[in-house]
Image 1: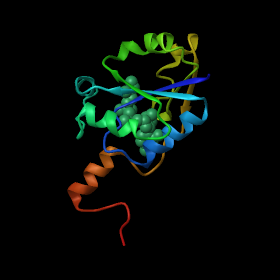
Image 2: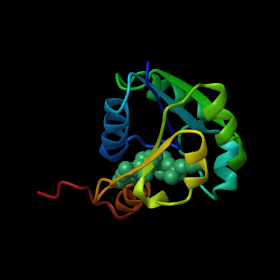
Image 3: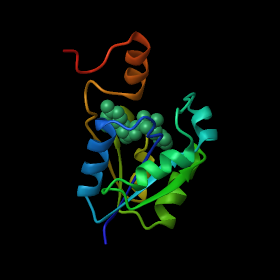
Image 4: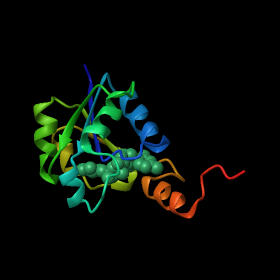
Length: 135
Ligand code: C2G
């Protein structure tokens, strides 16, 4: 069984997240998502709208996702890859090169991000009273 791992906050779920998860799952048989805890989000200077538990529930409802575990530190990736017998590490290309140290343990793949959508854009557009499908 080929196991894939990816990391993220996955707040205010959108099509960019789904495109990443779909492509990551297509690279193997099992997709493990390591979901940023609320505390780790603070380290990333991010404030998620949904709690960790709600973001976990939402991710677990996605057909591409097989398992969700928490991300507490930047340093846990090697242990996650080894402990879970991971074959492929996948992230969006905004992280290009940042996790190449994992190449000693698994394949490392950076996938193109989905253009035009982000959690930040959603928050900004809502504040401005706009949407992504202006009539
Ligand atoms: N993503 C994407 N296209 C977008 C937005 C996000 O492909 N338009 C991808 C990101 O590249 C990432 C995943 O969706 O691979 C999750 O995005 P975030 O929740 O923003 O994750 P991030 O905060 O980058 O967390 O230790 C790594 C960090 O936890 C990564």
